[in-house]
Structures are given as structure tokens and as C-alpha cells.
Image (cartoon, rainbow, N blue to C red; front, side, top):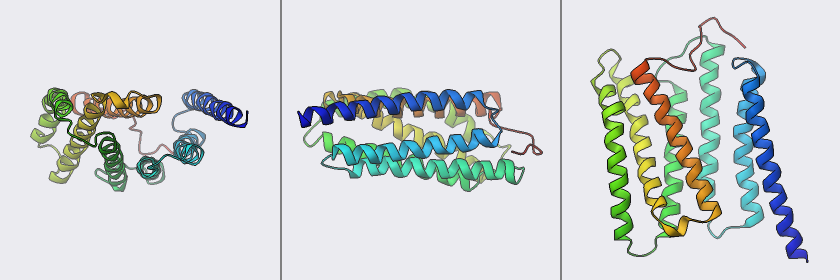
Length: 233
């Protein structure tokens, strides 16, 4: 009975967290995007996700908790990047590129990729040549799309500084690495567990958002988060 009660309790915690996340996300879009409340809420939601992972590790005690610490570190660093970005945006009234915020975002991408790499190595202890071939086919196919629509136009653009072009190239390269890791995991039947599906879905959503943002910057020449220099909290 005690074990069953504990399982029910954990299920309820997961449901409550999901409901809180939906409400927090919905509430964010109801606030003025440049308001202090919206930005603080954005930071708190991001940090709460990291705390939730730590709580999950504490409750379920996985054999290799280090995998999840990679993801927690990535989330915290990404939030630091958001705070730094908003400091430039609202505090200083300018958006330099590249900046310290970009360093945080790129480090967060690296930490996520490391977490997925450790996860994939744990799930594939033996010879998995066939899965590697499947993943390579998917990654190369989608990688060509990234090269055609994002990487090549970025490299060919001479209207920005060399450093800005390098950083703009590193972002889609990080997405390409993330894409390869996702293709590797999606072809693994052992990752088709509830937890594995959630991790894969989260990484895929992040990848889609990054690619969509890059497409806007490269082809529409518009930053959806750009504001006037005089705009403050």
C-alpha cells in the first residue's frame, strides 16, 4: 500500500507541475511582452523547469543522475543568457551582437548536446551500426536544408563583421549537432519510453524554435524580439 501511495503521489506531482506550466505559459502571453512582470515570470518559469528536473532526480533516483544534471545546467545557463540579453535590451537600451548573452546561449546548447550524448551512449552499449546509419541519413538530409536556408546565406553575408558571421554560423552548427543527436535517439527503440519521448519532444521543440528564429533573421531580416532603444521596463 505504501508503494502504491507513493506512485500515486508522484503521478499527482507530475500532473500539478504540467498544469502549472500550462498556466504560467498562458499567463506570460497575457502580459505586455516588455513589462517587468513578463520578464521576471519568464526567468522564474525557466528556473522552475531546472528545479523540477532536480526534484524528479530526487524522487526517482535514476542510476545515472549526471545525465539530468547536464540538462539542468543548460537550462540555468540559458536563463542567465535571457537575463543578460534583457540587461542589454532594457537596461542599456542597445543590443550588441555578439554579446555575453550569445556566449550563454551557445554554452547552453553545448550542455544540452552533452546531455543527449551521454544519454545516447548509455542506451547503446553495443554495436548499433544500423541505427547509426539511419540517424546519419536523417541528419544529413535535414542538415542540407539547414545549409541551404541558414548556413550558406549567413556565411555569404558580408554586411556584418567577421565575428558576427562566425557566431551566426555557430548557432545553426549547434542546431545541426542537436539534430544529429535527436536522429540518433529517435531511431533507438529503447528510447520509446514515456521519459524518453518527453526528452526527445522537448529537444525537438527547442530545435524547431531555434531554426524558426534563424529563418526569420536570415530571410525576413527581422528580430521578433527587437525593441526600440528607448523602451524600458
